[in-house]
Image 1 (cartoon, rainbow, N blue to C red):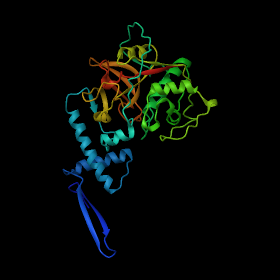
Image 2: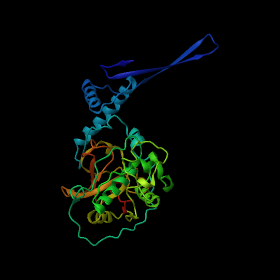
Image 3: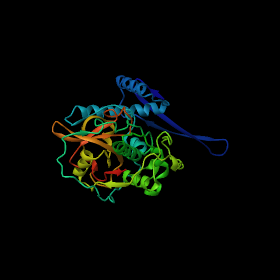
Image 4: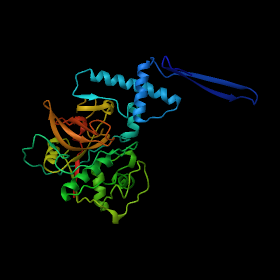
Length: 344
């Protein structure tokens, strides 16, 4: 039963229990999905958002998602009214709680990358004030979309290997995330349930190759391994790990060599990120809480605040055309806990 004007839906759940074949006792419970009414303006905004992102719900889910959307919108407006280094905005995730979001888009379990050992040979510098590999040549593929699979680690891996291969050979390939989802389990990766780029690079090295996206397209679900050695298009000779928490080694690698894969911890406010330099006091900066993997393609500074330029895998409609900036120099959210890149 729905009262649209007040924005309240009351759900009656009734169970008929047959006692002796002739008598039926009915038990009903009542649950209100709204603690406070939703205004007509809020519901109008929700309908506009539904149209933009082509969402479809049944009646019950409509009111559930309206409640979540309204709460998220208030969080965004409150944040943007304050004094912060980044702005929030509505996006394709605005009908989700963080629990929903974490279930579908982050690693199912936080990855512990404490075993990472550093073997990056750091140069002496000095380093340029800013660098962006997207502007240095045809070295970075477009932003991809992992969908509802915890496969961010595969997109961080392919993004880095695509760039390193292009810098080395002059040829920008689009490489297969699905092969990593399906085939890299022996290297402590778990398909849609998570993994780490450093472990994926190890898999590619010992597997002797990774196929292209065209030859092994992305499905976004766990499947049987279908790797064909004769179609391997990109290769790894060695894996370089950045020394744990040594963020200047990341700067050295990105400035002098290539983009770098890294993992960090996403907390609730990050799903609403729109622009600016992301900072957080809620996330951890340790090796055992990282739950998302991405690709640092450069760095810069804004109003005196240094940041990383980061390629994400949630599609080009999220953030800054699929990218985000995150504070550099403070191991923000553990981003320097387990960074790596391949040698080709």
